[in-house]
Image (cartoon, rainbow, N blue to C red):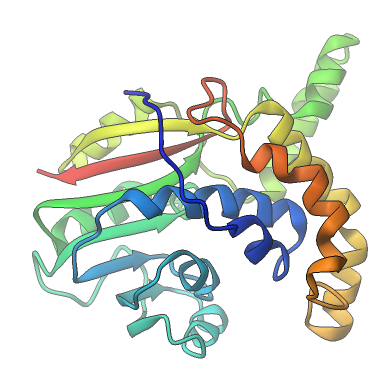
Length: 268
């Protein structure tokens, strides 16, 4: 199902980097481009909308509903003017009638949900027959591609490599990192059919994200003290960082060994 993806020329990399740590910004910027060529008919549900930052940068229109179970982030989303309605609720119990939405998206959310199958079934319930459901998640390549673990494997320290993978998966709060076949089975049980998918984020791009967790500690200190990730959002402040990571933002898609997968599914 892999195919050549035509991406937007809008500089999402700068837009995300000025607001986020660079390693998170890189991943979100790559994902923002995917939505530019997708049709998401109204009304649209953003499942796991968080603080609304991703939707604010990604879409040129307001989305009808943002849903999230966390009080703090969803209240922040309310300050952005991105959604017509915000709903604080668990995705397993959505206060919407059957076949209410014409499309839905969930960006880097489903991998964190312990009761995933229940949420998928509930998402199918609130979608109209034939509605599009798009989402992205880390896949089966995520843990094998971690650079520190691969180094430990190469020098024969496989127990340490396993421990490191478990550690990084835990700090990433991942519950599922599944392959397309596993996702197709999950989705089919919930009432979806996968139309297409593609892998993205090469091992080199993932290493940038991985090491960013450690190199980004100064930004965390700034955020704790000022509630901002950067001292200034002027473009010149990000020029060196953007020069280093732009090649990963501009990677050709698909990446066959990419650590993340973007799915386009349809409610049956």
